[in-house]
Amino acid sequence: MKLTQIIFIALVLSCTANAADVAAGKAAYEKSCKKCHGGDGTPNPTIAKMMKVEMKALSSKEVQGKSDAVLKKETLEGVGKMKAIAISDAEAANIVAFLRTLKS
Ligand code: HEC
Image (cartoon, rainbow, N blue to C red; front, side, top):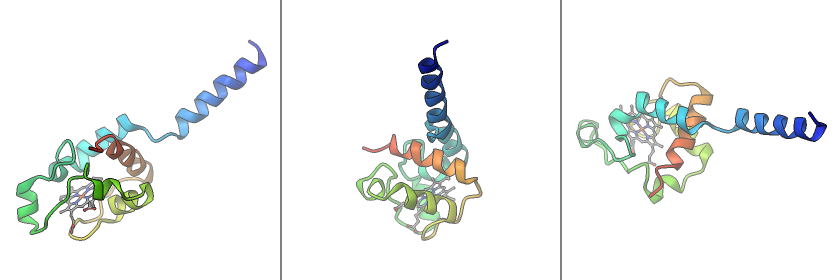
């Protein structure tokens, strides 16, 4: 194998290792968020009523307008009436990558 090929493979590998993983984010979202936020980010009306709060769709302009850092922080620490969700930092980053795919 040529050195340039080795460098190319190393670069590809390091990129996939660092990139947030949308598929893993979707799985984590379905486990930890879907019951309240719906499969596509549409709020579960029963939950919103129960928690007495108007929930925005995660696909909406307002939510998508937030930075990755803010979305990650809100996921990890909670926001308003939403409590903190016990997931790892890496999982939260993957979930944020998945949330970006919901953008309407
Ligand atoms: C027990 C129900 C519940 C679960 C589980 C839940 N949330 Fe929430 N989430 C809420 C509610 C209710 C709000 C609205 C809070 C408010 O406005 O006071 C909210 C708000 C948010 C917001 C801010 C939206 C906005 O209005 O800007 C984000 C982002 C969010 N949730 C992401 C997540 C993610 C990601 C997960 C999973 C890791 C998750 N939530 C799990 C109930 C939940």
